[in-house]
Length: 335
Image (cartoon, rainbow, N blue to C red; front, side, top):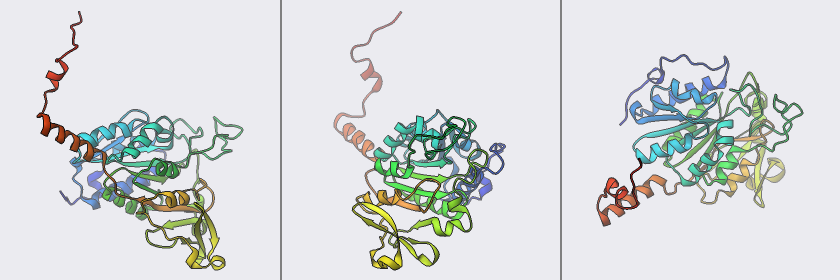
């Protein structure tokens, strides 16, 4: 059902408690604006979060929601989506929540292709616990828990999602509201698991981590916009481009290789190899970084297949009786 809403309809009476200047405010505004424009009935929307700064999100959305267990939001959302496939189910998580304690739940939700939309707020730091390095912090990151510099090799969330064979994978930036809303709309329209990494500035513990993509001068030379069906070029006047050779992507000067050699992005390709190669161009907060939709490919949705099996079983054996099944054999009385 399509309903006319404004952003205010998705705001709650709860005081928003993030640090002043936090990128989460911008993401919240983008999500509320998108929801209003999409016209989805509020009673048909569920936001589920784990633990962390981003996990306060359901308090601020005038929809159904649950602030759940650390890292388990994808598992809980999977249950909601399977039981109520008519709902629009969203997960909000951070890089600590999703990439560390919740890593296992995340990758299995993606590989199963459950119809949930997962928003990863990636600020490359643990903000809620006051600034320890996270699974996406760059090597050498000096924090309270890594005073000599982190020695952990970080996750690339987009590469991880593609490796788990997610059917929709995208990246956007908190400060770019139009782009974020465009990606949210595409994720909503995609039937299946949609993974969206959102670079989010933590102005207290990791300020300007993404300045290479948000600074007025830096973004022109570092931001690689991915558009399906178009050549991957960027920089002043499209002077730089990306070629893919031997399964690897590399950045070239277009004038040196010729425009015909530049890769044409195909977000709908059956094989995610090219999308994966593009994801490897990202080096965290440094250098040219692709943003946009890396992959959007239809494949069977988990709850559709499950419901099909249930209908087939009921057609063969009847609707069944769970209480009778439990009491049918091997039961005993305690006490």
